[in-house]
Length: 271
Image 1 (cartoon, rainbow, N blue to C red):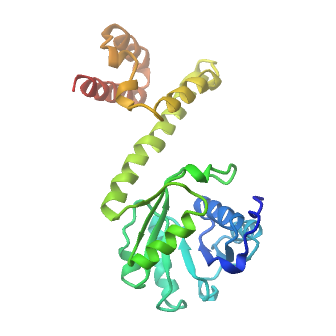
Image 2 (cartoon, rainbow, N blue to C red):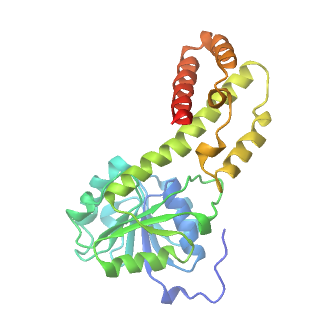
Image 3 (cartoon, rainbow, N blue to C red):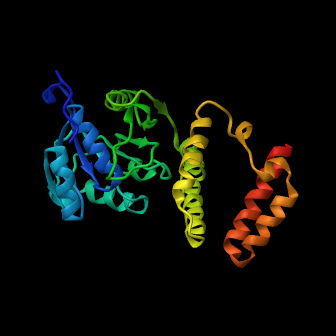
């Protein structure tokens, strides 16, 4: 468990209830607890997930939204996108109208919150999460939005306790950001998976690619991805491209992905 920072009094910091104990809720509970915030309660429909996060967050838990505590300063809804609206509607039945409530979604607008709670916002950490490892929160962008300047400042103070990178991002900007994140993270990770499958089919280890992947990620920290583009498509090496496609002809899926990405790289190199 992350240790509480020295000289931090929980009594002086806002109290938080976390609604949802998946990857995002789990990591938020850990970091907020570590920074002295009082996690009053955790909700999850899964009793095992709720209990696990409650242990980490040093608080109680519930699997029944109708029984959730009603006195926290902030409610963070960290559930799947398609569950946000229904969870908000359930919370409307028990929480005071003046409750400050935020969701953590990059793809969902504030509308499901705006319709019900006058004090609403977004607390979107732009990072990939798992329950097995702890991210470097100091470098994780936290994208914030709120209905009022006062509540936005309140969210900034909470996010600023563990991240140096705070951004105001509205619905339209957040939608674009989320799509870009899918390209940068989800799609690239899937390509890692396909690479691993291809290697293992020919008795080669994915470990051979790990240094290459790491070096590629390092380069884009300080340079434009376009400047760093390498490979046969960037060089216009038609001989190698034909050889690769010939090799992949027994796998229509990989062949098509290779072709589409090659054509995209070629167009952007020329432009």
